Amino acid sequence: MEIFLLYSLLIITALNISAYIWAYIKQTDHLTDLSYNICFFILILFLLYISPDKGLGKVLMTTMVAIWALRLGGYLFYRIKKMKKDRRFDNFRGNWMGFLKFWVLQSLSIWIIALPAMVFMLTDDPAYWWPGLIIWGVGFILETVADAQKFAFKQKHPDKFMDKGLFSVVQFPNYTGEMLCWIGVFLFTIPSLNGIEWLTVASPVWIIVLLLFISGIPLLIEQYRKKYGDTESYQNYKKSTPKLIPFIY
Image 1 (cartoon, helix red, strand yellow):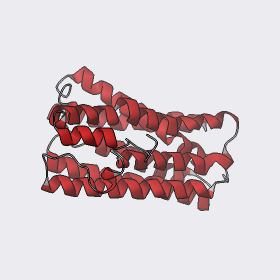
Image 2: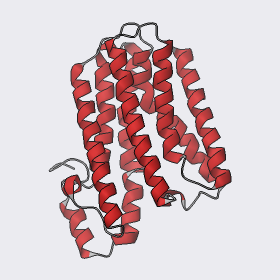
Image 3: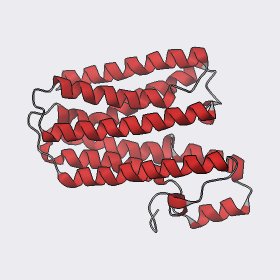
């Protein structure tokens, strides 16, 4: 198993460095999110292909990761084609070292997030926990609906902040859905985990840390502060609307 995990990291890094070279030369953001999701898609199909056991659990895991990757990757690619560029990279897109650091972090993040799925796919006849599939499904639906609502709203109101639909309940429902997806993937694998394999809990922990403190919510809050920070309506929305979980946070 260890050698396949190492190969997976090398494959993920090679794909991202290739995308980085193209993106830096072209000074484009079209591959940034697409390469992220393509890595998950290629990785899970490769692991299913090499697995001698293709039972129901592995088919379900492959379906969960592949559908999530195709849906999110397709949406983000379509969105960036419409937007032309991602403002998150304006400060370092032209700095080859700063831009490279992002792609290296993305490679490592993909590997960490995919850990429970990879270990599960490399386990002989793994057991699985059905509630994990349900939690993944709730997260997938939540993220999909939130993305669709925000995209439709921004097409009509590009200069307004989104506070309708799911965004009237929490500020970042798409991130709530993303976290639930990977929490669900990890929970799905719990019955098959042994010993050091429990370290795959790093996957949901890392996606939560990433979205809460690094590349998710902090960057969006800074964008919103610059664009809407002085408006009374946005300040009231921030104060009255939880970030991720209704009535809690």
